[in-house]
Image (cartoon, rainbow, N blue to C red; front, side, top):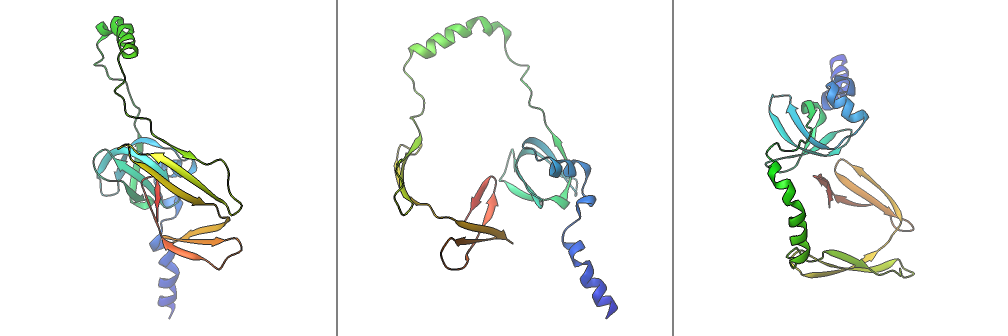
Length: 185
């Protein structure tokens, strides 16, 4: 019986490593979240360079330069080293006198740039909290959506998003996950 109690009492320590057991660079990241280019070293010795997109108390979202984003659990990280972006030494100095002519050429020639992208929102919100949005995609297709504004509270527990709207029934639950810097429902 004592062994069972000892085993059950140790489960939380087996599931999540305390913050004191994390490497110094990971603890520094938790204390002061930072985003940008970094080199992540895993506990198994692998290294990868990429971009830190999100920092939580459980994981770091890391987008390697090649491959898909992944949520890396903090206990699996050995170190995070920040990479300073540097200007290339390959810039030809002889081209500096030509820069004003390049600017003049850009202003005189018709623009071949991508079309204007954006969205429009109606300024008036109806009494039931609805408004419309219209936008243009990069492929020049037009989209429209109706938006309903509702107030309430939410919580995320073990990958499930629970929403309770003001003046409505109890929680609505849906599975959710973070992929890179987006919340996917």
